[in-house]
Image 1: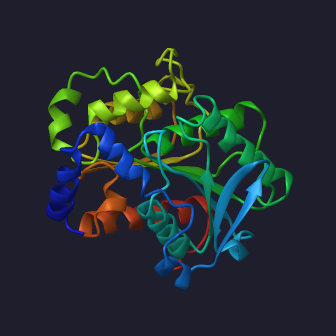
Image 2: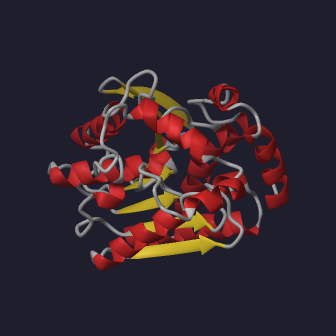
Length: 298
């Protein structure tokens, strides 16, 4: 899908009442990849310590595992595009992939989502699936990017298995949404809106202080994080907060591979099948294989 087409389609949906737009998104949730993906990738599902997960190419797990913590504003997901992204990275790297079906806001509020993600990672380590000689990558988009950072922080602080690297697409790193440039970016981003985000965070973390590092990872301790790959578009609400977060990562001495895509919209690598999407996907896979010391499969 080209940028112009994505903008038109998403723009139509965003003009709908927020409640109806969110309801429409909810109808797209799927814990199974498309039939097209299942023709080229093996799929299996299981329950780990009470949390549902879906595997792609589990037979490749000894090579390494990409753990995808999906976005959706904490209230929805995963969607087909997220499975597409995970499948693409599994194909390019030769790694297994796993999608975590953490509890969504509305079903259970914070800290249910990071609790579920941490539980899955610790169970995988206890089962010998990750850790030791088996590296793993944490990958997240939007709200899932924020959860990826929170999960990583919990694992490191709790002496759990540490990921080899993090791959983030348009991560939601500051739930306060206070940057003065956000208002100007809001109408340029057809994927999300401040109104949707405010509604989602109120359901996810009612009554909480949004400066809490588990809600705004830009406030968390960063100096011991693994290498981070991060992409963001110039036409998305999160751009100013992500730029600040990137500077904080650099100041903390964290290895970063940071890309700002001109004209890119929110989570553009999953939404747009054109040159900008392919650049991001190739860069992400190259980063992962480099950090894990593997050869790219493409």
